[in-house]
Amino acid sequence: MAEPETVLLEDEVLRDGLQMESRIFSLAEKVKIFQLLQEAKVPRIQVGSFVHPKLVPQMADTDALVRQLISNSGVLLTGLVLNEQGLERALACGLSHVSMSVSASDTHSRKNARRPAEEALAAMTVLISQAKRANLKVRGGIQCAFGCVYEGRVGEEKVLAMAQAMASAGADEVNLADTAGVGHPQQVRFLVRKVRQEVPQVELSLHLHDTRGLGLANMFVGYEEGVRVFDVCAGGLGGCPFVKGAAGNVPAEDAVHMFGAMGVETGIDLAKLSKVVEELEFLLGRSLPGRMRRVLGAERVGI
Amino acid sequence: MAEPETVLLEDEVLRDGLQMESRIFSLAEKVKIFQLLQEAKVPRIQVGSFVHPKLVPQMADTDALVRQLISNSGVLLTGLVLNEQGLERALACGLSHVSMSVSASDTHSRKNARRPAEEALAAMTVLISQAKRANLKVRGGIQCAFGCVYEGRVGEEKVLAMAQAMASAGADEVNLADTAGVGHPQQVRFLVRKVRQEVPQVELSLHLHDTRGLGLANMFVGYEEGVRVFDVCAGGLGGCPFVKGAAGNVPAEDAVHMFGAMGVETGIDLAKLSKVVEELEFLLGRSLPGRMRRVLGAERVGI
Figure 1 (cartoon, rainbow over the protein chains, first blue to last red):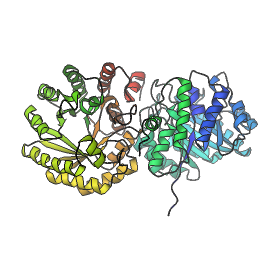
Figure 2: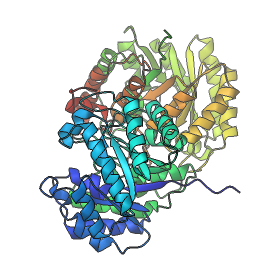
Figure 3: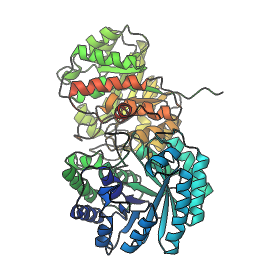
Figure 4: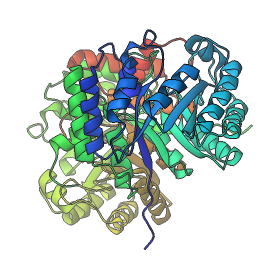
């Protein structure tokens, strides 16, 4: 019998999820969430970002968090690095894997990173080389790869050139992010196919926002096109600051269910993942958009 | 230039949406919702079901509603018919299109329709013939086509035989319903392909529940496999009584957005469709799961 297909899900609730929340989570609360994710056997967890604490106070304790968690086995820890100081901090904490990210949209880059997209990309390729020299695994992310709230359509040639630049600089993985949640399945199929042709040597991953309800549809199409690494957030936390009230990232539990239903292994325990969502809903005092926790809670009668 | 692809969306909020609600909507409220759907240019609307008012009091005024709406042009009205009395009522109201529906799951059929699945199917084929003799357009629906909360997997050979029986009896359209919301995209691809091979002469449509978040993913795959008729509910109302709190039907507005983003025409005005969702949320006093009303409300800045 053939081996079952597997995918790797990276949970980003501690970074992409919490950075959008006005409530600042304590270090102990973050550790608790991490432990619940770990108990659910989530294989890769993005625990925070090494940005200036004044810019994103929610992430101020990322170094301390990593130091506390780094000896945990069975989980690959990663953190978001956006500049040299961030890289130094990530190295000082002992991380062996980092994510970097720049925008394909010039307007978005100027607003979000306060520099033109081209300049941001050039700086990132330097940063990737530095990280590789320090023996880190590096993922290079392309924000707004499927379109931008400000600029609308983003040309695929720009995305392809960025992917190529990241791969040439030594990135182990290139991540296409639908930051604005505007991508649709046909577009995902098209762009993923193109990028995989352009940089066949790197792992391609997808970071999909569920703003318009297409997160799982886009993830499925990405899977059909050969993508095997996907970002998720327990509960579907996170998302786009420009669309208040809309949904965030693809809920981890719904992705685990989808792949499980298709016989694709994530290695993640869905019932235990529900505990993460429960904890987040308790701490935030509101329901999160993910579906499977409620299904699991209501059902337990079969299927 | 090639004509753009088109799909037909049937809104079922007045039937599948409202029948699950404890609040009984007045005739005037239903008319208002219908008018808003009509203003949004929804091409086909299922306005109610001709069941016994004691069994489904929410649908007790279906006859009166149809009589009030029947002269409206530009919208194809349809209603759910489950037995001979229902067919007589639909004909007496002047409907020219009816939907019928039986379950592929014997347990579900016994619980829901109080008869074995085989007996229900036999009765329905008789009913289809009667409706065709009366010059009605008929859609035959297969509930639990993708699985059942009680029985788990439903064999595809059963679904194929049912589709064949309905087509032979004269059904113009066969509808595969994911009543329990357990279908996944690979399964939709497989089953739709099989059914289209089995009964190429009839239109195939899909009725997908979003219980586990896969509604749009399944709809997209159905579209890729050639399906051009889909059921939706404004706001994503409706759904499965066995999974309280979980999402209902595929939200009409999210389906309109998905197809629109892909350049596939629905003919539906998304901004006006939001008014339907607003009205439903006002009447029900709660938020509905559909995403696009919130996106449209928050955005209006591009894309």
